Amino acid sequence: MIELQRCTDREQWDDYILDNGGHPLQLWAWGQVKMGHGWKAERIFAYDDEKIVGAAQVLIRHLPLPFRAFAYIPRGPLFESGSKDEFLDKLAVLAKRDHHAVALSIEPDVFEFERPDGWVRSTNKILSAETILLDLTKSESDLLSVMAKKTRQYIRKSDAEVTIHRVKTLAEIDRCLAIYQQTAKRAGFNLHAKEYYYDIYQQMQDYSPIFAAYEGDEMVAFLWLAISETTAYELYGGVTERGQELRANYALKWHTIKRTKEWGLSRYDFGGLVVGGVTTFKQGWSDEVTVFAGSFDKPLSPLYTAWVHGLPFAKRTLQRLRRKKNS
Image (cartoon, rainbow, N blue to C red; front, side, top):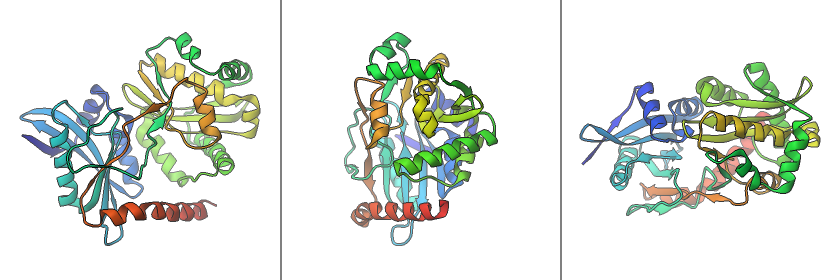
């Protein structure tokens, strides 16, 4: 029998996540970031006798009535073989009992997932299941060999035009965010308020490195990661018009891939694929697309169907409000 216990010890939590190949979005600091922006984070260990056999950082978002709350586990949970079904069902009981959640949604960090009874494949997703995932245990020459010819050419071209530095100060982050605003305007996507990005930098610290490409003293591109012991996960990136002319994002990404490889990480995740030019750029780095298992829900309320159909509308409304606030 599995017993769930809340973890209040940050060091114990992160040690388990890092030692067991957990995703950076399951680190304590990521939960702290989300707690500053409308979510509650609970860290739950599953014990079998005195042994930890699973871990889940559960994010809870309070919702307007009648839905009350939504529970979500990004790129988790972690679990040992044989404990999955019982662990997930007990997490669902906790989400319903303690938070009155309309559903518990998970997006596990696996490629295949056999859902327990009562769970359904979700029609909504928060993280993209499709991505480019590089195996950093391969040699640099092997990584280069699966790239498109133009990607290799642009890496060589831009490497001679720009220099790459690690971003270390809030002033530099402001320059990154100015580039990100330009990129978002060109590509038509929405941004969080600046405070959200500041919180990531301050909370995640060394688990969220940022690299930037410069032409002289001018920053022309940036790339922002979240990392764990095994995985580098791209959070954000942007490039100026001048950076596009220089193909600066090619030299920048290759530098970042090589650096995370040097750090001993084994996977480099491009953070998902979306429609448009960004996806075309990402697909040039590998000859195959990786597809994670996807999103799964445990319905916890008779209102689940209404929630599923209403969520896309709620997202669009939130995006409109965010655009007005940041304009």
